Length: 130
Image (cartoon, rainbow, N blue to C red; front, side, top):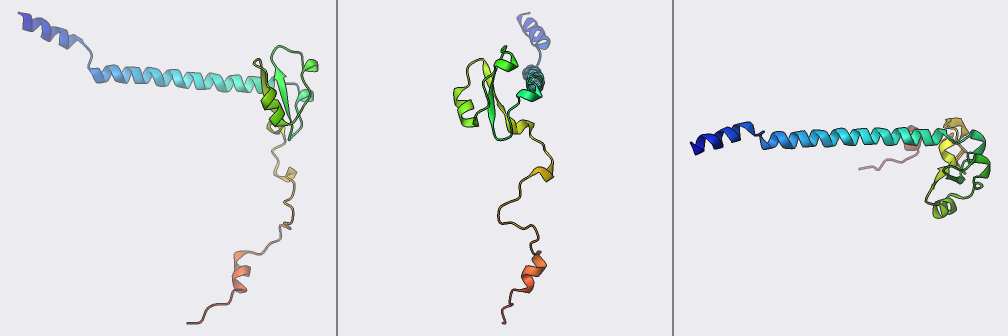
């Protein structure tokens, strides 16, 4: 009689792999939800800074939460902004707001852009005779 009771109890318990699978599924669901919430928070924070108060490209600005835009600290170099960021502030990078157009890039110093192709380079190379 004791054996039947034990077999019945075992039959009612879920398989250990099923329990682990359910735990893994719950963890993945929570992780995906948290990542989505962080992205939304990042997008919201990026959009809450008026264009007139964004730092220029190559500069940064400390943005303190719950402080009006006109009372925020001035733009500074990024190393100083990162070093001096208060607990209730964040560093806004001017490059995040810079234009992403390819024609806005400064030319590379000493590069004319009209270089030779591989075929032209190889024409000038003398072949070794066997």
